[in-house]
Amino acid sequence: MAPKARKIDDTRLMLRDSGLRATPARIAVLNLLAAASQPSTHQEISERLESRGIDKSTVFRALNDLTEVGLARRMELGDHVWRYEPTRVTANDDDSQQPHPHLLCIDCGTITCLSDRDVTLRVAKSVGVIEDILLKGYCPHCAAKKE
Image (cartoon, rainbow, N blue to C red; front, side):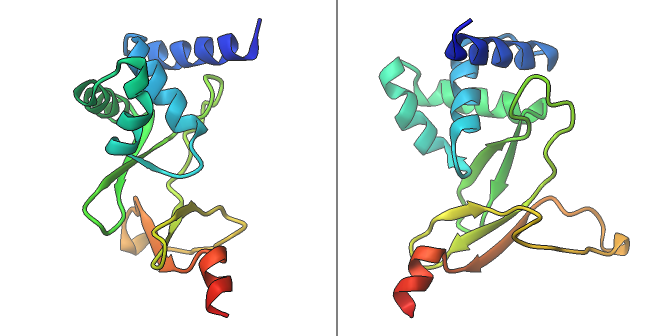
């Protein structure tokens, strides 16, 4: 089976396992989120899928559906714009990705997903449950320009 067909089959399986119908729009949105290197806005996703005939309202509903069943995570990074990222990358990924920190570059606006290797955080249980962690600073490109 071709890699693209396998990817679509995996996406269909994830959607169905989550209780959603595997519509072309949901498949396209979920695959686009999985391929993105950073969280994406509704506008960015809509622009990328416009050529496939998927309109903004369909993308909005798909994002809400994916968030509701836990296949996507919605976050606001201080600029009053919702961004979305996948919580699972493959159908066989039983463990949802934990919320992870993001670096928002205060110069160019780039958002970078950070891993445990990039940042180590310890949060006391008495604080509660942390959903999003946003660090503001400079991406490597902008930091190099400042030196």
